[in-house]
Length: 266
Image (cartoon, rainbow, N blue to C red; front, side, top):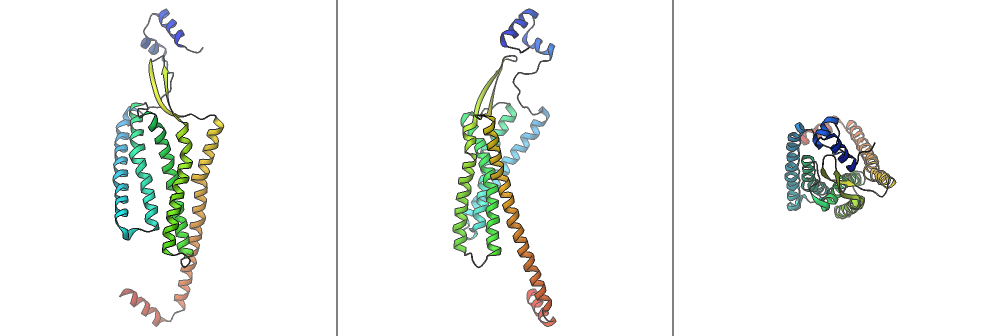
């Protein structure tokens, strides 16, 4: 038998008990399931969130300020590190406080705009970080395997183009989250409370599955395979050069080896 508001009123009048007495007597659970942290864990999570927020803001902010001021440090690797720091900074400033409020109050208090913005930035930051690490692998692959074919100006220019493409792709991947995130208010007539939550509302389950598969492919599987292939070739190239250097070193006379080692010590 499904419990309705009218049926509940009839049962309360017939039994002549209050709402809370009725709930305690029959051990009825809330009609609206709300995920809650155990009360003992709330202080622990609060301290962890504050630490994460502080480290994310100060650490990544310091990295951005340092690398942007020091022109001598501007290189392809610097641009990639700035991209990683910026994505982490967005998570720390926007997403961490909103998640902390949700855990402590068990309700979404940040409004409709942040309900869309927070998941959107979370997906954007994750995609940006992973795609940026893939770009770092590409840059190292070019620099180690084709050092004579790549000029410094070309590397800087291509790095900027890659980073712009990374952020555009990341924003495109996260765009669906902006449209499916909705603020929903559900009324639990048994406990007489309203629950406000920020949820994904898809047109159908099939669209949710398609997006999940696409996200997994573009953000995890393809970058992981690409980085594995590139770093595998880099390791093979470095190992081959190491063996060649050892072979050449072994063919040198003892007097030449002593000159080389003595020069290195000086």
